[in-house]
Length: 248
Image (cartoon, rainbow, N blue to C red; front, top):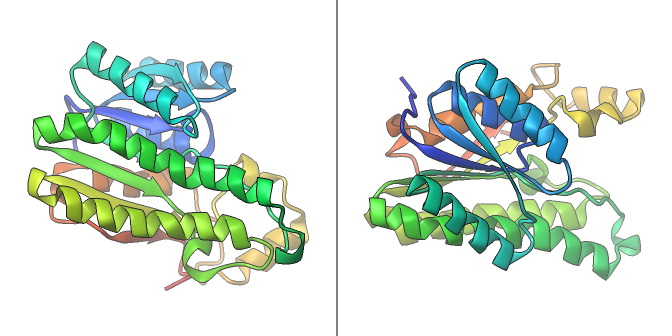
């Protein structure tokens, strides 16, 4: 169940955190994984090496998702080598927090370019191959704050909410070609980014989680593997929340 043998999967932002967990989980399910990075080439190579050590298949590829031309070129190269792209896990994203009155236009533009334009550019690039193969799985990584909001994260929350609308529109456009588009919305997950939070911040977040613990990257990755699988072929335009009950 949930096997991905013979599938080619692109994971953006795959060098660490949730992206790394997704890359490793997809490879464990049998997919050949393209691990994307922007600056963390060494970390990406470590992910690929870890996958290979367990008998999986992985490659690394550096490009910035906010650069649409770079995305198109990279996807073309993947197709030249492998003949197709079956699965996109659009995980790459950035966080810039600011109260609304202190929000700078340039920061909002950076967030939008990476968190929204990037995933959409990746989906556009891989969709051509998916249409030819009449099979595809597109998964956007959003966030619990994209649905419930959070003080100090107006811009970030807006970008994560935008992915939900984008995925649902893509789902409608490509349904006739057996291509699904869904969203995974994590809550408080143990990652490099959350590790730097002050202890009082962590405790405040946990108080909002009925399961009373942070989630793991592997738990988010499991949701992505499911949505990438054959068994999820009748699931499209949905938001799968992995948040311990933080938002219901």
